[in-house]
Image (cartoon, rainbow, N blue to C red):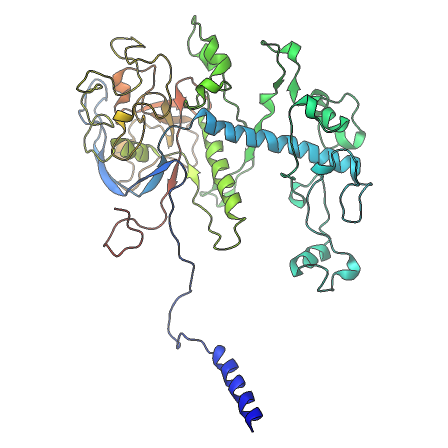
Length: 491
């Protein structure tokens, strides 16, 4: 009798476990708790409103400007301009991925007939460590065997998803393999051929990689460089990405951009001027590591923001639990930039308030060109560290929103923008043939007028200058205003 009672209890327990606990009510879907976290090196700019436009309008300088009250959604912003060090992380990642990609192709061509039972090149084969990674393959006879691999692996194998070296979606780069650029540490001759150039590549290899790339390699010989030191071919460091077109509801074609900063801007921007040190050392030298990156176009700044999003989400996807992708990093809109620059001060002329560019001790509060063209009156000649002028940090904790380098925004430049933009997160962007992009903040070579938080300027999106840099933003997810009980409230 006890045996039957136990069976009945187990049956009832199992039945109860399948009964829905919503009682037939609309209760919604249970989701994971979401928390916003400050991205590395960024500060939170809270939601709010401000009067967009000149604090003290001038008919001469602003040409009858329109003042407009606009409301802004909260977002995160880099506390400093993007530095040479940070931009180098982007450049080096792209450089390494290009090198690894070419090594993977060479490894596949050289070793595809010399694989062990695990599908990897045999010991002592050239470029063995760089062989492409691809989904685990299950033999046809074992596809139905539950012990032969995961269900997904067996499914992929049943679809015939073998590696196609010409189709990047079928394989991955091995990022764990050791990469070296020092000739004395090259692991084998085939590695050296890829890095330094190969005058006699195999036919199979040239069908995938252009003969020009194979014959030249990645380095410029020492005898062809100004300082007689071998150098990486920076023209070949290109970043490919595409964007979603909201107007047509489809992905645009992939675009490819050279991302290495143009160091010749120090010559091009100043005719009949000696700036050789800045040309040769500003981006590559250790002395300028924490200085703002310059010589990058609006297009390159956009590519950096895209990579930063990809790089972070790539890390997020590796998390085993509670995987949450981050909102995209991007350039700020013109309105976001001005709102952040004001630091919560309504009608202020400068990020620190104003109306003066110096403090009560007579020290200048920004890096610019004061006193009728005296570049060193502010104690600095060219740019300065991105976190300089700590005494001039604005109310949101942002450095150098005025001076040092001007900054790209995501907005198209229209002279009378304030007359027609929305009062809710205003922006002129999207699909447009307008290649003029708004530049804000003034730079080390500008007079005080361009340092005002409301002063508008522009540059063409493909231009690179020694006085224009950028910083990125990320939208705040959820709402930061409301009652004290709001879990997302930030102030």
